[in-house]
Figure 1 (cartoon, rainbow, N blue to C red):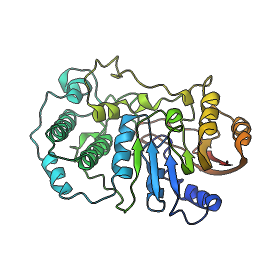
Figure 2: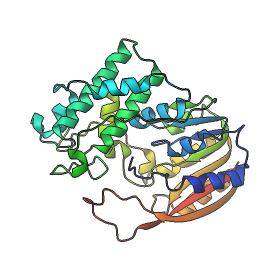
Figure 3: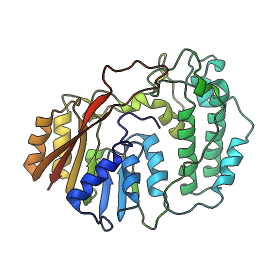
Length: 333
C-alpha cells in the first residue's frame, strides 16, 4: 500500500540500527511495534525475533497485522477460496456500492461501480463464511487483508481517502482482482492488538519497543476511513461529500496533548531498548523528544535523509522538495 509514513524504504536502516544497539542475535528477543500501521516494520523483524507484538487502533491496520504478523502457519487451500471469491456473481445491495460509487446515486466516486459491487460481494461472503464457521480466524484475516489491499489498489483517490477524484483514473477503471496477501511462515507465535497504545503499554513487556506514532495533525482514521469501513463492515450514516464516519482522533496528532501522551508511554514502557521514528516536520521537536527520553535512561539519536511520501503522481500536487529527514531516537532504559 502507498501509505503515509510507511517505513518500507527505511526498514533495512531500522533493523541495522536496532541490531547495532540490541545485538545481532535477536532470536530470543520480544519485539513490539505499538503503532504498527500496515505492519511493515513488524514484518521485517518477524523472521528474526522470538515474538512480534503488533498493535494499532485503526481496524484496517489490525486486520493487516492479524494476517501478516499473527498468521505464521500454512493455511491449506487458501488459493481456492481466493478463486471462489473472485468468481462470485456481483450484488448491488452492499454498503460500499450504495454509499461510495456514483451508480448508486450517492454522489461519491471512491470506486468504479463494478469494483464497489465486487468489494461488497467479497466482503459479505467472507462475513457469511465466518458466521457459519466455514472458515477459521487465520483464513478469515488472510482473506480480509487480501480484500483491503486489493480494494486499495482499485481506489479512485490520490492515495488517501480524504477525497475522491472527479474522473475515474486508469488504475481505478480496471476490474479489481482479489490477490492473496501472503505472509511469512515461521515457528514462532506472535500477538496482535487493536488498542490505545498508552493503555496497551501497561499490559505488555519485552526487549525492543519500536514507536512510529503520527507526526502531525493528519488523522489516519480520516485518511483511510474507507478501509476501516470495509474491514468493520458496519452500517452508519456517511457524512458530507466524503462520506466520513465518526473517527478516532489521536492525542499524538494534537499539539496540546502529544508531549504528555508521549512521556506517559515512555514512562510506562517495560522494555530495555526503545526506538522512536519521527521526522523533522513533526509536532514534537528534536529537543522536546530528547528532554523527555533522557529522563528515563541513556539517549542517543541517529538520522537519515530519505524521499518523502508522495500521493499518486498523476493526480497529486508535488512538494517543493522530495527529501525529508527521518530521526531515530534511541533510549536504553
